[in-house]
Amino acid sequence: MSNVETDPVELTCYSTTGAGPVEVLEPRDVPLGGPRAMAVRRTLPQRARSLIGAWCFADHYGPDSGPMDVAPHPHTGLQTVSWLFAGEIEHRDSLGTHAIVRPGEMNLMTGGHGICHSEVSTPGTTLLHGVQLWVALPKVHSDTPRDFQHHVPVPFDIQGATARVFLGTLGGTTSPVRTFTPLLGAELIIDTRVTLDLNESFEHGVLVDTGSVDVAGTLISKGKLGYLGTGARSLTLESDSPSRVILLGGEPFGEEIVMWWNFVGRSHEDIVRFRADWQAETERFGRVEGYHGDRLPAPPMPIGRLRPRR
Ligand code: MN
Image 1 (tube, helix red, strand yellow):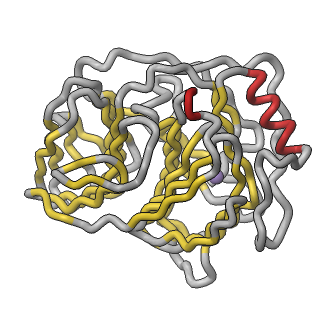
Image 2: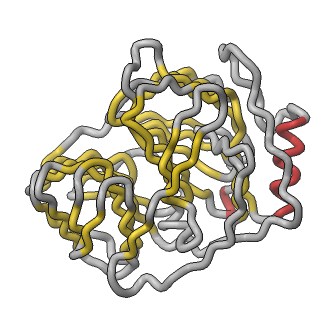
C-alpha cells in the first residue's frame, strides 16, 4: 500500500522509555487518496512512538467493501508486509512479481535501493480487511536489491490461542522469511487467555483487530495498539470473547531514519533524491507491467528540512 495522504504530515517523534506499563497507541484515521477513497487506521508512526523494533508503519483497514486500487508507487529503504484477514489483492511490482495476496499468506516485498508496485483488490473481493506493515531496513542494508518473498504459515495451537507466525519465532515455530533485523510478526486468534513466551531483548506491540484484549493488565480495544518495552519474558493476553490480534516485535532499532511519503532514508537529501528519481522515472524504481492506469505522482516536498526520528 502507498501512503497516499495528499499532504503527508511530517511528524517529530520522540521515544519514551520501554519500562513500565503498557502504552496505548491510538489510531488516527487516514483517507487513502483517489476517487475510491478507503479509510485506514494508522497506529505507527505517531508522535509518541515511531518504531517497534524495525516496524515503522502500521495501517489497519476494513472490513470495507472496497474496492482498493493503489496505482504504481515507489518504496525505498523498507520492506512491506501485506497481511489480510479477508479479501484478495492483486500485487504487481517492478521485480516482475505478479501475485495474489490472500488471507493468512505472507507477502514480504523488499524495496531497499528502490522498487515500485501496484495493489488492486480482485473483482471477486466484496470485503477487504487486513493490515499493511512496513519494516525499516538498517543503514547497512538500506540499498539492498528488490526482493519478494511468499510464505504460508501453518496455523498451530498455543494453549488458548491459534497462531500464524509470518516473521520470526513464536511458540517454537519459526518463519523462513528473511529479514535484516531480528523481528517478530504473528497473527493470534485468542479464545479466552493465552500466555506467550517472549524474547526479552525485543520490544512488542499488540494491534487489536477484533474484540478487546487485556494486554498484561491494560485493556486494549479494537483498532488500538498496546506497546510493551524490552525486558518482558512472557505476555498474557486475555479476552472475554474470541479476539484477533497482530503481535509485532523486534530488537530496538537504534538508528535514526527519515520517513516521508513512501520512502525511508537517512537524511533530507536522501528523500529529495528518491523523490526526484521517481518523478524522473529513473531506473531506481523500474516499472510495473500490467497495471491499467497512471503511476502515483509524488506529493510536493514540504517546506523546510525533514528531520530524523527514532
Ligand atoms: Mn506500497
